[in-house]
Image (cartoon, rainbow, N blue to C red; front, side, top):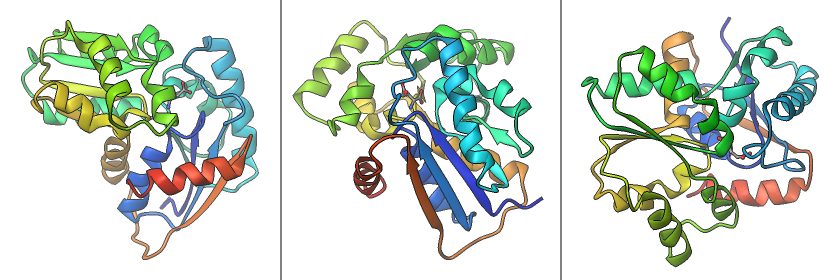
Length: 249
Ligand code: DGL
């Protein structure tokens, strides 16, 4: 199967950073983006609630005749991916496995210091650390940096407020060799995060990782134009306005 029409699902606007990478890849004719903006954030919720919301979103995608669904959210990928896969008759791919693969491709030394950033839920799931340990990496630190989510949603991509939060979270952290941006909001502030660590760490971005993963896994076509349909559970206009900013960042 060569996927032409795909879905991209996120709890809200975070998945737009993944959407941007997917659009740049030009591999798809139609992309249906759905953000559950009425119930964002998912990252502070329990596994049960995250799973329930995700299965409800799946009902939306089930009526859109897609060839493949990308879960463009680390929190959902950490908790609800398996159940979603069991309830759909098309492939569903999350961002975590591709992120881990991207890291193993880029960081060969298993003693390298790896910093994993994410929402409370993603970090509590321990999924990145477990998968990396399974691959032999032993110098791993996980850190929840949930405050970055509302900041990015406020359009705060630089400046004093963001720098205070960066200092608050990273003051006692030694410069890592790699950082997994384990939340799809974080690529929007990746420059600032990287700057804090003297631009030394390699950054792993969910969007770039998933494109590499899809290219390795599927025979993909190339399309000159991509038709993008946006849907949201609340305020579609707000989602579109954010998309306008993020996709052009
Ligand atoms: N974008 C989501 C992620 O990648 C986080 C936002 C939320 O908490 O819903 O984990």
